[in-house]
Image (cartoon, rainbow, N blue to C red):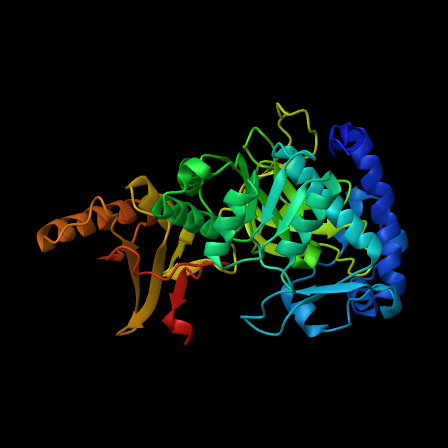
Length: 432
């Protein structure tokens, strides 16, 4: 297997893509109506039957699904096939409530791995590559998705999972890994560890496929410099299968959505109104080929923009921007909407590392925001005056970006806990 580029799909005309979507949406709505009583009730509440959905132009008529619905229906309420046809589950962390459990038939897994294979090829992967998968395995979708995609392409796959950094570096150097798959925060940590161990000249990596958490363009540049690679974004949700829903190509100006499997909409997060192309809003996905967990109009809470501007790579599927934040993770501080990505952008532009932490509290009935950031080794000074001046500079830059005051505390290098999985960036004491 020399390649997994699928030009008949990935460069299809807009007319062909719409034909696929119209046919598959109609079939999927009927499948959900027949097999998912929970969603059928939601359709009936709106006075809908499958006959009301004749194609993508009718998609807006269907009711939304939210994470609250998935939790209410836990564990089997949204399952679309008999349990005997399901071969696997994956699950979200459940850190903010009841877990979400997603089911998969073998067909679902095959299509999911196809999507991940497309992402690997778009990052330059071929059967000659060695793919080191340092996403977590188990219930988390990251490891399994990229593992299966790597097999589809025909790469040598290193199923490392997350953590055990010393072993990661040993296999990376001994087996000459060329593509790294993990969270961006762990990629940054690996780059730091490689430099500390003096292994930079032994690293053969050429590309990285990073997702599962928000990361800025500034963080991308830091990772690319630290690992000597080209860093590609990948997007997915457990609810819609996992990573591979969308992926970056060589242009790195957004992620191509696999429109033969997913229909994307952008809505106003407050009103639910569908917004025109190019508008910033909440991303909504409809899975049109999934059998076991066929979600229609699922609200991701991710804020982004869709564009059909022609791409130099030749792929014709719509692009989504890197998520600009989440409508549910957005912090409201003193009435101002604050996204962690805004703070990360300021810190990286000022030459500080991506490892930081935000502490939100309420003191005397007023919200407070404190930003902890590590001083770089080459900047660190024992002079309190120098540290205070640096803090003042960051306070001013953050106020320009956010419009509110944020206290900044510069801490010693390596004093903020490193993450081997998803980074814990926010501690909101108002919720404790």
